[in-house]
Amino acid sequence: LGGISQRRFVFAHTNMKLLAVELAWRTSLTVAAFIVALVLGVLTDMPGKDVMWQVFYWYSIILIITATLTMNPSAFFNGKSVGNSIWREIQQLGKPKEDVSETKAGTKSEAERSKVGFWLLMPSAFITWIFAKSITNAAVLGGYYGVLGGVGYGGWYISFWSAALVGYYLRTRHGYRSLTSAVDKLYGPAASLCFGLALLFRLFNEVWSNTAVVASFFGEEYSTEWWWSIGLSTAVPCIYVIMGGMRSSLFSDVLQAFLGVLLLVSILGIVGTEMNGLSNLWSFKPPKASGDVGSGETTERGWLPGWWTLFLAGVLQGSTSYPFMDPVLTDRTFLSTPRTMLLSFAWGGAIAFTFITLFSAIGIYGCVRADAVKNGHPAYVAAELGGAAEVLIMLVMMTSSLSTLDSTFTSVGKLFGLEFGGWLKLPGDARKQRGPLRPSDEEHIGAAHITLARFFMVLVGIAGSFYLLADTEVLNATTVSGTVVMGLGPPVMLMLFWRYASSAGATDGWAQSPLAFLFSFWTGVVWGAFYQERKKTDALDGFELGEGAYELLLGVNVYGLISCIGACALGFVIDQLVTPLTPFARPRPSREASIEDPITGEHIWLDKDVDKGSAQPIYVPGEGGGITCSA
Image (cartoon, rainbow, N blue to C red; front, top):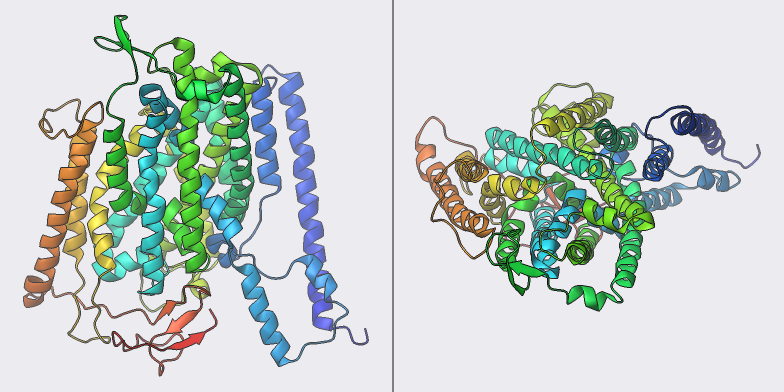
């Protein structure tokens, strides 16, 4: 072959063979999809003839056919692009073999290419939090409070900034590579288990609440068509995330983010045409009822009072606890470089808030058609508009549901495959101690961890779908679940100010404090449980703050957060002053061996005399310097 590198030729030849196999099965899947569509649409009476079902079906097929297929931990859990593309390998076939310096430069270039960039992370963060349930809630609240209903619900979107800032400081000041590993190190395995259960509670809620919204467009509740849509909207994201994990989720999110914005603009255009200008829509005021809504006795026109109460409740939850129970959001704060992540979340949060606020227009238009408040459900508005507008609104719901669910299943896989699976002795894990695995621990992640992740994706998807037999109140997935986990905020914030031991085994620094986490967490759970049962008990009477329908939500979260802060402080004091005097004394954690450079994401080793991968280094606060090594 003369000057051609034999290694590159063999590698490229192998890749070409793999590409041929992959194209073969993707082509076969496409042909099978056409056959199934033909059978459903022509030969049977199943719901394949309806335009919305056809759109749903083909959109799903496109997502599955174009999904990544990988068993590489870096791609499956971190979303990285691993290795050179086939085209790059062909380009390099005729090049002479590189020397050592070129090889190092090439490796760095490959690492740069593998990173998750701004234009991948920003739209992914944005669209994964445009839940189907969220835009439904925004529309419904638009029917209560007008455009301010969308603003009120947008209060929860401050979560983007609070999650990003916590992730940034944990990475660049403390050296953590995941939120769960930080909780496990500073608060112990019992806290880590409770934290994992809180994450599971959130992910489980995301499955049923988002599929229920999509199903409302395809049939009456619990009808055959309704269950068909539940199954399809659950199975499709589960399938393509099982194939490629985080990598599949990120790339499908980019497509769906673009499509979601395009659809929203189109819908607003249709509604604006119907109203002879959007300004007429925003200025509309429905008739109020003198008594209960629906009494028919009208006195004046205007929206219901109390939007600001909902807004304050959302801001309070979003800034202190809500984002930390949602791994769909927090998992992404550990992707890309810290600076890129921060910018991605800042822009993604702003776009998501704007999207949610504008979607309240759907609820307002529903009230225009009914000439009454509380008529903003998107399914009702879509049916009123009919035609192309109905399909467009359904597509927005479908896009937001699938993008949320693929991220949900990705986080389910990480939770069970790494964070719970790290406690098991699975093949490939060579660590001496058990505990949660981080996505960056690629040398300890094997095929068994990916298989375990895939198994629980399917299990949670099935369980979440069957839960619809018990609860279909989608707003509960935000208000109740956010209240139940309000106790996460104080211990997470405390981590940002943690004082570490100067070295492993040293007696300075703070002792591990499980009671700080557990006291706060279970105090929040008690408040949330009472709020869940508020219609069956008067235990929360007198805790209302603000006005309107959400005054109890705000009051419970204000008083509950204060009590969680007090419980966290009490547990912390006990662990620092009392527990060390007993046989149950806890270890004093030392700082992680390295932190991340904010711009490059490279490791900065805190002890100049410690090698990469060695024991915990001695860290002297206030001293600069450090050795920067390639990540």
